[in-house]
Figure 1: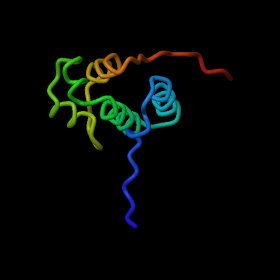
Figure 2: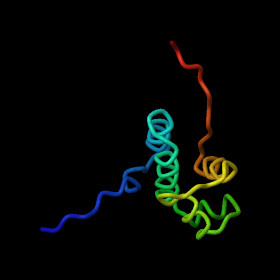
Figure 3: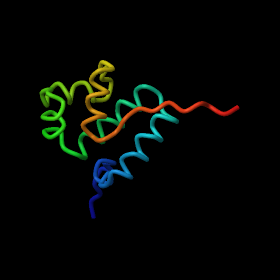
Length: 94
């Protein structure tokens, strides 16, 4: 019996799950982990769809959101908007 590689994108099948996943990455992850999480969400929704909504090319998205990618903040904002998300700042309680 063979095993398949775990891919989180296979489990990001609702807006609630996507929001929880991204919020966890924003709260607990470093910059690389956050970019990877956004890339996983884009993959789950479909890179072609995200490319169309952002006005970016699929290769550019793959490159920006890949491991080690260094996307511009504007790219992050475009992708978050395309996946139905936003960044929000809440005060940190002491």
